[in-house]
Image (cartoon, rainbow, N blue to C red; front, top):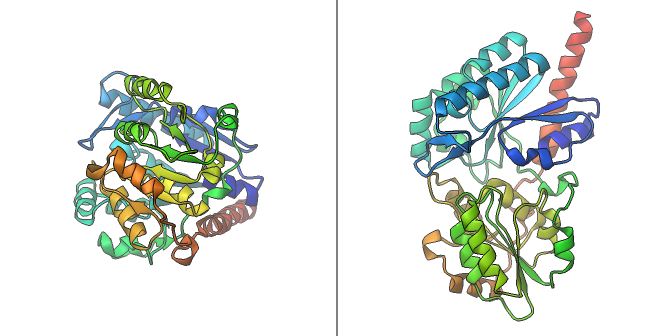
Length: 372
C-alpha cells in the first residue's frame, strides 16, 4: 500500500489492483483508483512449510483455489506492470502457470525483494531447489530491491547469476512516514493513555507471544505507560492470557489491531519490537529509540538485519534467548540513543520506485497510442 499510494500520488489516473492474503486488508481505506482481491491465506510454520490459515487442512486444495482466483483476476485486469513480492514463483509455486500468461499479455514483470532474505547458504539452497533464478531469467524484466547495497548487497551475498544481477537495482529503503492516513481504531484508547509511553509491537502476532508476555511482565519506570499491539494472527487463547495480565496493571494497555500505527510510533518514548521489515522501516523512518528482539526461525532475516543495524548504532538488539522482563526493564531505563539513520542508509526508495514506475507506465501509454 505504501508503494501503491506513492504511484497514485505521482500518476492519479493509474489503476492499481492489490492481490494479497491478508484478511484485514478490507479494513484499510483505499483511495480512488486502488482496490484489492483478498485470497484465503497461508500460515508459515516453524519448519518453513505452509499450512492453510483457517480453511481446512488440505494445502493442495488451497493452492488450486488461490491459483484460480489470481489467474481470473489478472486475466480480467490485464495489468501493464505487475510487481511480485519476494517469491519469484509465488508461495507454493502458485505463479508457475500465471507467469507465462502474463508474458503473453505483454505485462512488464518486476520482482520486489527486501534487503535481506535469509542466511546466504540457506537462500542459495532454497533458490536452487525452487529454480528461482530460471524463473527470473525467463519471465522478469526487473528485480527491485527495497534496500541499500552499501548496507547489504544481496547480489554478492547470495551469489546471483549474471542474468539476474543485470536486472537488479537497489531502490533504497522506503520512508514509511509517507503511508496514507488510515482510520485510527485505537484513538479513543490512546487519549486515555498517560504519556510518556513505551510501545511494544509483535507484527502479525502468530509467534509474538513470548515477547508480548515478557513485556507485559516488565517493570516500567515511574510515570510511564505501556501499549502492547498483539496483531490479529495471535491465537485467541494467547491474546486472552495477555488480557488477563494487562487487567492486573494500571500502567499497561492492549490493542489487538490498528491499521496504521505511525501515530503511536511518533508519540512513543521508546519502541520494543520484533524485527519485521515493515516495523523496522517505521522505526528507521521516524528515527525512534528502539530495541529489536528478532525472530530467528524459520529464517534468519530479522536477526541479520537487526545485527547490522545495531552495529551502526541505529537500533539496540537482543537475542530472543536473552529475553527477560528484567532485560527489557533495564533497556527502557538506559540512556542509549540511536544515530540518525539518514547518515547511514538511503531512505529515498519511494522516490526511486515512483520514478521507475512512472517511466514504465509512460512507455506503456505511448505504446498504446502508437498502436491505436
